Each structure stands twice: as structure tokens, then as C-alpha cells.
Length: 340
Ligand code: 5GP
Ligand code: MN
Image (tube, rainbow, N blue to C red):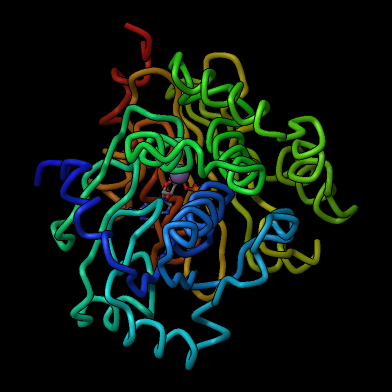
């Protein structure tokens, strides 16, 4: 499906609607940032907006304006079911397949609401009637900025919206270190600072909030749990349930761990496999033109972006790692030169 033009979307928003903004499981900074920014904007346009995430977001996002109003399906089930039932419009922000709503997916799919996609991942499902999907952009949060701009509503931007968009851009680009080779991203960041964002302060709120056990878990992941396979330009980390319990794992504690495996010279593919809630959560990262979206889709029923993707697997940790090792030979050539 082609992207919907802005005018068609604008025409659907002429009268006040009950809008439910949803985002993906294990919400990250861009999921929460883009959802909140969109909510603030749509409320200024006189819509009634409710936000819903499938499960809780990490504590390092708990400074964000409006975060207390986000309904969490796994905790506030009844309120979420009511909100889904009442919605005229349901927006999917920062994901592109309702499957990523976990238990809320069937309810959202059954809803008669107009379904709108606002996202930057590859391979959107066809369950949306309106779609704004842009993959060559830093983040969904940046996309929200561009939508507000395209709607001619720059005058509605304020510090709150700017902080949410800034958090989304910063967290989805590793503090402007990947997925951000775009002039527009930097121009928008400059504009966000002009709107009152204190970039240094927000950076500290997001990144300098480790608990001692989180930092020790990071150290353990690297010193004890990292496997490096130079022949395949690959490195991966495994964390069992027992490992996570030993370090009193909290939601968000493993965020960023996989990037350390990718920071090794000549490592072009990195993975983190961890046992969580009876499943194995896989995170994949790559350099250059090696697509982990493709790898995750073809072998692990997951997906994401070219250089950052994930999957949730029913297999055991050992089975998952063994499968990962088994597929590496088929990528050996592709992993050799990722910048050609
Ligand atoms: P992370 O490794 O940080 O959890 O996720 C990396 C990227 O892959 C994110 O953009 C995320 O939305 C996407 N992703 C993570 N898990 C899944 C999954 O199970 N399925 C799909 N399609 N995408 C995922
Ligand atoms: Mn994102």
C-alpha cells in the first residue's frame, strides 16, 4: 500500500475524534516519545486522545511529559479494552504489525476504528487503512515532527512536544550515531533545542540513570557472556533467566547491551539472546549494508530495520543460539564486506 497523502489524513481529522494511540511491546524511547508527541499535538487539535502500550516502559523514560497517562494493557486491561472499544481511530506508532501488541492485538484487529500507521520500520502489514511509513528517517518521533510540519501546524509545537521528539530521535539513533545521516534530522534537532529542549539534561535523564546492578550486568554480559566468532565477523551475548535474576534485572536494563558486541573492530553482526517471561528475546545489530531485518524475518519470524532488528522466540536459549550458529555460514560472504 502506498503512503496516504497528508491531505487525506488531514480530512479525516476535521472533526474531533476519540483517538487511541498504540505502540509496541517493550516500548523504547521512540515508541513512547512519538506516541506522547502525537498525543499532545492531536489534543491541541481538539481530539480526545488515549495512549496504550502492551507492557510497561523502562524507568529511564519516566521523566517524559505525560508518561503517567499511558495505559499499559498488561496492567490496566479493563481500561484498555474500553478505550479500544470506544476509539474512532487507532494509530499504530513506531511499529507496523498489530501482532506487536501481544494480547491486545485481536481486540485492536476486531475494532471498527479507522486504523492509521505512523512508523519507520520496513515491511508494514496491510491491516491499516491510512499509512505514513518512512524508512529513511531517524525515528518515528522525527516523522511525527514532519507530519506536524506538513499539516502546517508548526505553531503548535512547544517544549513538551519537543522533549518527546528529542528523546525519540536520540534513543533511536544511539545519540545521533546511526540511522541519522540526514540533514533534516539535524535541522529538526536544532529546532527542538530552539523550542526549549535542554539536550544535555535530557541525555543525562535517559542515559545516566543506571542502578549498580544494571552496570554490573553490563560488565558481566561483556566479560563472561560474550562469544566472538571472527571468521563470521559476528559476536553475540546470551543471558539466561538465572543471569538476569542474579543482577535483579529490571525492564530496560539490557537496553544497549548488544551495541557493545558490535563495537568490536571488524564485527559486523551482533546479537543478544536473553530469556524473558518464558520466551527468548533476540536483538540483532549490524554495520553497513548487512540487513538484520532480513535475517530476523527469514530465520526468526522477527524484523525491524536494516541495522537493528529483533525477534521473540519460543525456542530455548540453547536452541536459539544453536540455530543462530547454524545460519552463519550462509552469511559468511555477506558479512565479510559490509561497506561495499
Ligand atoms: P530491539 O533489539 O531494540 O528490541 O529492537 C530493534 C528493532 O527491531 C526495533 O526497531 C524494534 O521495533 C524491532 N523489533 C524488536 N523485536 C521485534 C519483533 O519481535 N518483531 C519485529 N517485527 N520487530 C521487532
Ligand atoms: Mn523507532
